[in-house]
Length: 266
Image (cartoon, rainbow, N blue to C red; front, side, top):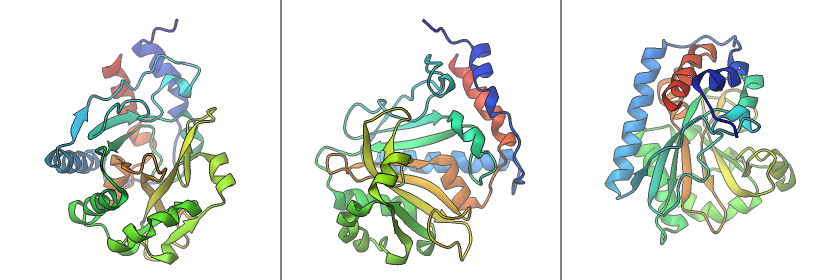
Protein backbone atom coordinates (compact mmCIF):
# COMPACT_ATOMS: atom_id res chain seq x y z
CA UNK A 1 0.00 0.00 0.00
CA UNK A 2 1.30 3.45 -0.93
CA UNK A 3 2.37 5.52 2.05
CA UNK A 4 2.81 9.16 0.97
CA UNK A 5 5.71 11.20 2.21
CA UNK A 6 6.50 14.83 1.58
CA UNK A 7 9.36 13.83 -0.73
CA UNK A 8 7.30 11.40 -2.82
CA UNK A 9 4.37 13.80 -3.06
CA UNK A 10 6.51 16.67 -4.27
CA UNK A 11 8.17 14.35 -6.76
CA UNK A 12 4.75 13.25 -7.97
CA UNK A 13 3.85 16.88 -8.56
CA UNK A 14 7.04 17.64 -10.48
CA UNK A 15 5.12 17.80 -13.75
CA UNK A 16 3.63 21.05 -12.50
CA UNK A 17 7.01 22.80 -12.57
CA UNK A 18 6.58 24.33 -16.00
CA UNK A 19 6.66 27.92 -17.15
CA UNK A 20 3.93 30.21 -18.40
CA UNK A 21 4.34 33.26 -20.67
CA UNK A 22 1.76 35.36 -18.80
CA UNK A 23 2.99 38.09 -16.49
CA UNK A 24 1.29 38.57 -13.15
CA UNK A 25 -0.56 41.85 -12.69
CA UNK A 26 0.85 42.06 -9.16
CA UNK A 27 3.04 40.02 -6.86
CA UNK A 28 2.00 36.87 -5.01
CA UNK A 29 1.64 38.67 -1.69
CA UNK A 30 -1.00 40.98 -3.18
CA UNK A 31 -2.87 38.04 -4.69
CA UNK A 32 -2.73 36.03 -1.47
CA UNK A 33 -4.38 38.92 0.35
CA UNK A 34 -7.22 38.98 -2.16
CA UNK A 35 -7.70 35.20 -1.94
CA UNK A 36 -7.80 35.42 1.85
CA UNK A 37 -10.43 38.16 1.64
CA UNK A 38 -12.55 36.08 -0.76
CA UNK A 39 -12.26 33.10 1.54
CA UNK A 40 -13.29 35.10 4.60
CA UNK A 41 -16.28 36.71 2.89
CA UNK A 42 -17.61 33.37 1.67
CA UNK A 43 -17.04 31.76 5.06
CA UNK A 44 -18.73 34.57 7.00
CA UNK A 45 -21.68 34.69 4.60
CA UNK A 46 -22.43 30.97 4.74
CA UNK A 47 -21.79 30.75 8.47
CA UNK A 48 -24.34 33.52 8.99
CA UNK A 49 -26.86 31.31 7.17
CA UNK A 50 -26.16 28.44 9.60
CA UNK A 51 -23.95 26.42 7.26
CA UNK A 52 -21.30 24.32 8.99
CA UNK A 53 -17.72 24.19 7.78
CA UNK A 54 -16.29 20.70 7.23
CA UNK A 55 -12.58 19.93 7.45
CA UNK A 56 -10.94 19.59 4.05
CA UNK A 57 -9.28 16.39 2.91
CA UNK A 58 -5.45 16.41 2.64
CA UNK A 59 -4.20 17.31 -0.80
CA UNK A 60 -2.13 14.10 -0.82
CA UNK A 61 -4.55 11.24 -1.38
CA UNK A 62 -2.29 8.19 -1.15
CA UNK A 63 -3.54 7.09 -4.59
CA UNK A 64 -0.54 7.63 -6.88
CA UNK A 65 -2.23 6.11 -9.93
CA UNK A 66 -4.88 8.83 -9.99
CA UNK A 67 -4.05 12.51 -10.57
CA UNK A 68 -0.44 12.05 -9.44
CA UNK A 69 -1.65 11.26 -5.94
CA UNK A 70 -3.21 14.70 -5.43
CA UNK A 71 -6.76 15.72 -4.52
CA UNK A 72 -8.76 16.33 -7.70
CA UNK A 73 -11.80 18.06 -6.20
CA UNK A 74 -14.04 18.12 -3.13
CA UNK A 75 -15.95 14.95 -4.01
CA UNK A 76 -16.91 12.85 -0.99
CA UNK A 77 -15.94 15.48 1.58
CA UNK A 78 -19.41 16.89 2.19
CA UNK A 79 -21.48 14.14 3.79
CA UNK A 80 -24.51 16.09 5.00
CA UNK A 81 -26.82 18.96 4.18
CA UNK A 82 -26.06 22.53 5.20
CA UNK A 83 -22.29 22.16 4.92
CA UNK A 84 -19.41 23.83 3.12
CA UNK A 85 -15.74 23.00 2.66
CA UNK A 86 -12.69 24.87 1.42
CA UNK A 87 -10.82 22.12 -0.38
CA UNK A 88 -7.29 22.50 -1.76
CA UNK A 89 -6.92 20.67 -5.05
CA UNK A 90 -4.55 20.23 -7.99
CA UNK A 91 -5.00 18.58 -11.37
CA UNK A 92 -2.10 16.88 -13.07
CA UNK A 93 -3.51 17.49 -16.55
CA UNK A 94 -3.50 21.23 -15.92
CA UNK A 95 0.25 21.22 -16.54
CA UNK A 96 -0.53 20.96 -20.25
CA UNK A 97 -2.80 24.03 -19.89
CA UNK A 98 -0.24 26.15 -18.07
CA UNK A 99 -0.26 28.79 -20.80
CA UNK A 100 -3.97 29.51 -20.32
CA UNK A 101 -5.02 32.42 -18.14
CA UNK A 102 -6.25 31.43 -14.73
CA UNK A 103 -4.72 27.93 -14.65
CA UNK A 104 -2.72 27.42 -11.46
CA UNK A 105 -0.77 24.49 -9.97
CA UNK A 106 -3.09 24.46 -6.95
CA UNK A 107 -6.42 26.07 -6.15
CA UNK A 108 -9.14 26.04 -3.50
CA UNK A 109 -12.73 24.98 -4.12
CA UNK A 110 -15.36 26.56 -1.89
CA UNK A 111 -18.10 23.95 -2.18
CA UNK A 112 -21.57 24.19 -0.65
CA UNK A 113 -24.17 21.50 -0.03
CA UNK A 114 -27.47 23.21 0.64
CA UNK A 115 -30.05 22.39 3.25
CA UNK A 116 -32.35 19.46 2.60
CA UNK A 117 -35.43 21.59 1.92
CA UNK A 118 -33.64 24.12 -0.31
CA UNK A 119 -35.14 24.56 -3.76
CA UNK A 120 -33.66 26.13 -6.89
CA UNK A 121 -35.27 29.48 -6.09
CA UNK A 122 -33.44 29.79 -2.78
CA UNK A 123 -30.22 28.40 -4.22
CA UNK A 124 -30.14 30.93 -7.07
CA UNK A 125 -31.02 33.76 -4.71
CA UNK A 126 -28.10 32.80 -2.48
CA UNK A 127 -25.87 32.45 -5.54
CA UNK A 128 -26.75 35.95 -6.74
CA UNK A 129 -26.13 37.41 -3.28
CA UNK A 130 -22.62 35.98 -3.36
CA UNK A 131 -21.91 37.37 -6.81
CA UNK A 132 -23.44 40.81 -6.47
CA UNK A 133 -23.67 41.64 -2.77
CA UNK A 134 -20.50 39.98 -1.48
CA UNK A 135 -18.22 40.61 -4.47
CA UNK A 136 -20.05 43.26 -6.49
CA UNK A 137 -19.24 41.59 -9.78
CA UNK A 138 -20.45 43.21 -12.98
CA UNK A 139 -23.75 41.62 -14.06
CA UNK A 140 -22.87 42.31 -17.68
CA UNK A 141 -19.79 40.11 -17.40
CA UNK A 142 -21.56 37.04 -15.99
CA UNK A 143 -22.23 34.09 -18.31
CA UNK A 144 -23.12 30.40 -18.11
CA UNK A 145 -22.14 27.39 -20.20
CA UNK A 146 -24.32 24.32 -19.85
CA UNK A 147 -26.57 21.84 -21.66
CA UNK A 148 -30.23 22.35 -22.66
CA UNK A 149 -31.68 21.09 -19.36
CA UNK A 150 -30.28 24.28 -17.80
CA UNK A 151 -33.33 26.04 -19.25
CA UNK A 152 -35.33 24.72 -16.31
CA UNK A 153 -33.39 27.22 -14.17
CA UNK A 154 -34.29 30.17 -16.39
CA UNK A 155 -37.20 31.48 -14.25
CA UNK A 156 -35.06 31.56 -11.10
CA UNK A 157 -32.10 33.13 -12.90
CA UNK A 158 -34.35 35.77 -14.47
CA UNK A 159 -35.71 36.69 -11.04
CA UNK A 160 -32.16 37.54 -10.00
CA UNK A 161 -31.08 39.20 -13.26
CA UNK A 162 -28.75 36.33 -14.08
CA UNK A 163 -30.34 35.08 -17.30
CA UNK A 164 -29.29 36.97 -20.40
CA UNK A 165 -29.82 34.94 -23.56
CA UNK A 166 -26.72 36.28 -25.26
CA UNK A 167 -24.60 35.17 -22.32
CA UNK A 168 -25.94 31.65 -21.98
CA UNK A 169 -24.12 29.12 -24.17
CA UNK A 170 -25.54 25.64 -24.68
CA UNK A 171 -23.30 22.69 -25.48
CA UNK A 172 -24.35 19.46 -27.08
CA UNK A 173 -25.13 17.08 -24.22
CA UNK A 174 -23.01 14.24 -25.62
CA UNK A 175 -20.06 16.62 -26.05
CA UNK A 176 -20.45 17.92 -22.50
CA UNK A 177 -20.63 14.40 -21.08
CA UNK A 178 -17.56 13.34 -23.02
CA UNK A 179 -15.60 16.36 -21.73
CA UNK A 180 -16.92 16.08 -18.16
CA UNK A 181 -15.33 19.45 -17.37
CA UNK A 182 -18.21 21.02 -15.46
CA UNK A 183 -19.52 23.23 -18.26
CA UNK A 184 -22.72 21.23 -18.63
CA UNK A 185 -21.57 17.98 -17.05
CA UNK A 186 -18.95 17.01 -14.48
CA UNK A 187 -17.31 13.66 -13.80
CA UNK A 188 -14.00 12.48 -12.49
CA UNK A 189 -11.48 11.25 -15.09
CA UNK A 190 -11.89 7.54 -15.91
CA UNK A 191 -15.30 7.50 -14.21
CA UNK A 192 -18.71 6.85 -15.71
CA UNK A 193 -20.64 8.56 -12.91
CA UNK A 194 -21.23 12.29 -13.14
CA UNK A 195 -23.72 15.11 -12.73
CA UNK A 196 -25.28 17.90 -14.76
CA UNK A 197 -23.82 21.32 -14.06
CA UNK A 198 -23.59 24.87 -15.36
CA UNK A 199 -20.21 26.55 -15.57
CA UNK A 200 -20.23 30.11 -14.24
CA UNK A 201 -17.94 32.40 -16.25
CA UNK A 202 -16.73 35.95 -15.75
CA UNK A 203 -15.36 38.20 -18.50
CA UNK A 204 -12.03 39.95 -18.04
CA UNK A 205 -12.70 42.32 -20.94
CA UNK A 206 -15.63 44.34 -22.28
CA UNK A 207 -15.95 42.34 -25.51
CA UNK A 208 -14.93 38.75 -24.78
CA UNK A 209 -17.13 36.99 -27.35
CA UNK A 210 -19.18 33.85 -26.61
CA UNK A 211 -18.75 32.53 -23.09
CA UNK A 212 -15.99 29.99 -22.69
CA UNK A 213 -14.60 30.48 -26.19
CA UNK A 214 -11.74 32.83 -25.42
CA UNK A 215 -9.15 33.45 -22.75
CA UNK A 216 -11.00 36.60 -21.76
CA UNK A 217 -13.44 34.34 -19.89
CA UNK A 218 -12.63 32.77 -16.52
CA UNK A 219 -14.69 29.93 -15.13
CA UNK A 220 -15.15 31.02 -11.53
CA UNK A 221 -17.70 28.48 -10.30
CA UNK A 222 -20.18 25.72 -10.94
CA UNK A 223 -23.84 25.20 -10.21
CA UNK A 224 -25.22 21.66 -9.94
CA UNK A 225 -28.31 21.31 -12.15
CA UNK A 226 -29.24 17.69 -11.45
CA UNK A 227 -32.78 17.63 -10.04
CA UNK A 228 -31.50 15.60 -7.09
CA UNK A 229 -28.70 18.03 -6.27
CA UNK A 230 -29.77 21.54 -7.20
CA UNK A 231 -28.84 22.91 -3.77
CA UNK A 232 -25.13 22.42 -4.47
CA UNK A 233 -22.68 24.95 -5.91
CA UNK A 234 -19.02 25.86 -5.78
CA UNK A 235 -16.61 28.71 -6.40
CA UNK A 236 -12.89 28.73 -7.09
CA UNK A 237 -11.34 31.05 -4.51
CA UNK A 238 -8.44 31.99 -6.76
CA UNK A 239 -10.70 32.49 -9.78
CA UNK A 240 -13.03 34.79 -7.84
CA UNK A 241 -9.96 36.67 -6.61
CA UNK A 242 -8.85 37.13 -10.23
CA UNK A 243 -12.30 38.38 -11.21
CA UNK A 244 -12.51 40.90 -8.37
CA UNK A 245 -8.94 42.19 -8.51
CA UNK A 246 -7.78 41.74 -12.08
CA UNK A 247 -4.64 40.03 -10.77
CA UNK A 248 -3.80 36.94 -12.85
CA UNK A 249 -0.72 35.20 -11.40
CA UNK A 250 1.69 33.17 -13.45
CA UNK A 251 1.75 29.39 -13.18
CA UNK A 252 5.31 29.31 -11.88
CA UNK A 253 4.67 32.02 -9.29
CA UNK A 254 2.19 29.69 -7.55
CA UNK A 255 4.24 26.49 -7.56
CA UNK A 256 5.41 27.14 -4.01
CA UNK A 257 1.78 27.24 -2.87
CA UNK A 258 1.32 23.65 -4.00
CA UNK A 259 4.59 22.52 -2.46
CA UNK A 260 3.77 24.24 0.85
CA UNK A 261 0.37 22.54 0.96
CA UNK A 262 1.95 19.14 0.31
CA UNK A 263 4.41 19.80 3.13
CA UNK A 264 1.59 20.62 5.53
CA UNK A 265 -0.43 17.56 4.56
CA UNK A 266 2.32 14.94 4.79
